Image 1 (cartoon, helix red, strand yellow):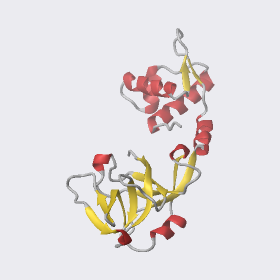
Image 2 (cartoon, one colour):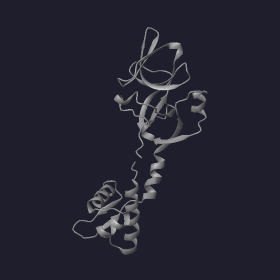
Image 3 (cartoon, helix red, strand yellow):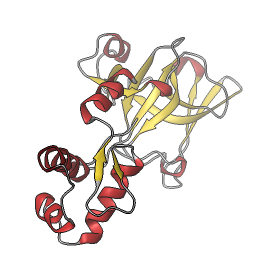
Image 4 (cartoon, helix red, strand yellow):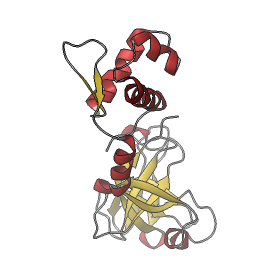
Length: 210
């Protein structure tokens, strides 16, 4: 599944229209002006990325010769077929998070290969830096496989007695559950087992780059 950046899509659309109307591809100078880039090297990188993704093909030994070999609309359709919508929730300080999971106000599309058809999933907006040493950053969306069972060492979404969902590595010992952060600046927290409800375990991460 490939998504294009804004500049890649701009160049693809320009090439598509230009080649359809002129039967040859534009010059580097024309491409620079079309997508408002200052250097030919920037255009070269965009062309290479489009070629690697299978959208265009450069014809060897011919100047100004490219062909469009994949439709962006068709690729988008395939993308949609390869995604699944799941509930997206945030850190909940009040109310019932289980209700939020079952009746979400917001959904998010995730790659279908992130999930199994045999389980339910939800997305959890990560807040804070307590798990950065595990590669989990503020603003990430954790894909959580819904289950009440978690093993020692799992990164789990747990509901605390304060009715907040938190994402931590868990360790269960002597009827206690330890919530272990992955950042030395944060302290481990300990609860009685009856004070914690496991909501699910980490299945994947989505990171958005703005």
